Image 1 (cartoon, rainbow, N blue to C red):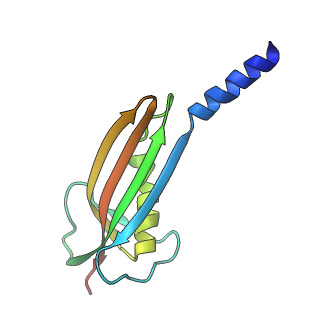
Image 2: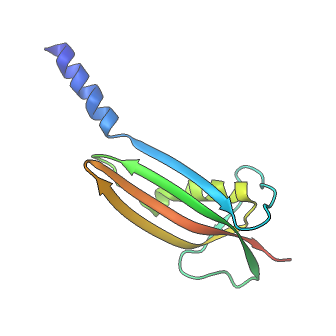
Length: 118
């Protein structure tokens, strides 16, 4: 009986996990990556006032079940990491989508990485 409860508890923990996948796609000639942990601005409501060029499409995909519900704040660190890898200085054009398949929920954020012009 105790073993069965332990197995059920492990299964419950596994089904409550969060999975994160992300990538970027260059929108032209690739820029060299910036240093890991580089500073990246995120513009949620408006583009920056500085001149820029779009350099990459950024995608962050999070799947979860049961107890958690990801939000944009959960995806921000990965968006910034992908922007650094793409050579971008900032992120604009954020789009959030949610969906579900049976018990698995999906949260997907797409955005555009930009490079400031000199």
